[in-house]
Length: 430
Image 1: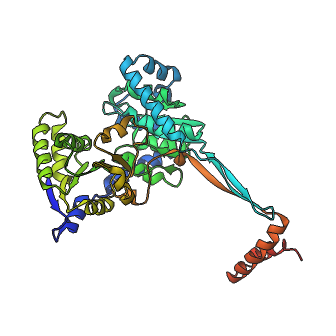
Image 2 (image 1 turned 60 degrees about the vertical axis):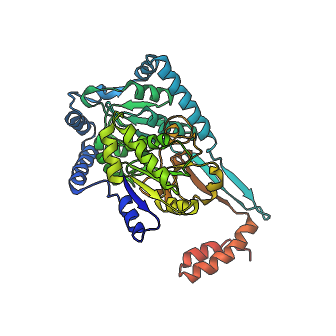
Image 3 (image 1 turned 135 degrees about the horizontal axis):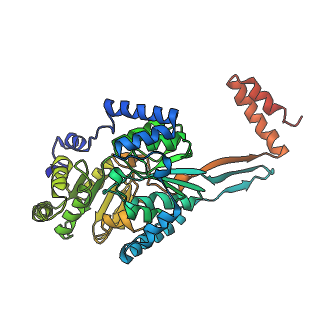
């Protein structure tokens, strides 16, 4: 891993280069996705089946073969080993409990003249959930995306999951059953995004699409935004650990591995004022790496995008942290809550030496769908609020309308909008 020092003159430039991440698409991908979206929008199920057969190496005749019943989902759940089912149910309950605290209700207040102002909060009608398929599938993603939608009150949740070469991940289907997903279709890629965005004869159009996917899925989500809502365009996974040098270096090394093993573009960074501790973690990395199943991926990620950053003190550590705006932030220090007021930008903050980021990925309760690539500067984790929308409420009394009309009239005429002004003036008491 590269070593950076906050005191070096070229530190900021080196940090910017370390964090640089190109967009999710290129011209070839863009053109392919554009074609897929156009064909599915034009030909519906026919195109969806054709692309599914081509890209997932299947040979099905119609959407009936790509539609899973509720009985099939329940069977996947019932057939799970007891330990897996228990873990899924425990994680689901914790995720559900946490997100229930996020639910916002409608509100209003009445002014002295009887005017009522407020906000009506309503759930989205129908949401599409994209789940990666095949062997590298993530049932935890089903829980994290589906449960907040259901807590928000979404009536219909449509899940799409590819089954390349017919490979079905039973844990994913079981997670769908636990999360009360309403319908599952075994389609994926840009063609599945198109089906959710525009609707086909079989798959209904949704209001919003959430969930992770490959470069084609991410590109498709970006291109259909506007026809439907999307959660975010996620970049590679990230972890930033701030440590005072008192945590077991093996623990920190493994925490860095936990994100680096996602893929070669993942980013793992450690910040510490203790040079000897940075050395110790580097030694732990060398000692532990060869024993990891995904050692080659971890090694590449750490070499290409990882870093050990030396700072003078915790104030500097927080300064660098806020610039990085990490997806996952571990505060591995004695008193993490004392540092909390200084953290302005982070997707999720894991406080204390015993709070491994991996707990948040599965079962702590908060959502693991988080802003990446410095977008934590202006965005938040996926939550119930992403599946609710808000309508402003305005109900003027006669007196309130008369008084507000005077102000509106002046401003409207100042903007040259006479109809606006006269509309308000009609209601002014003479």
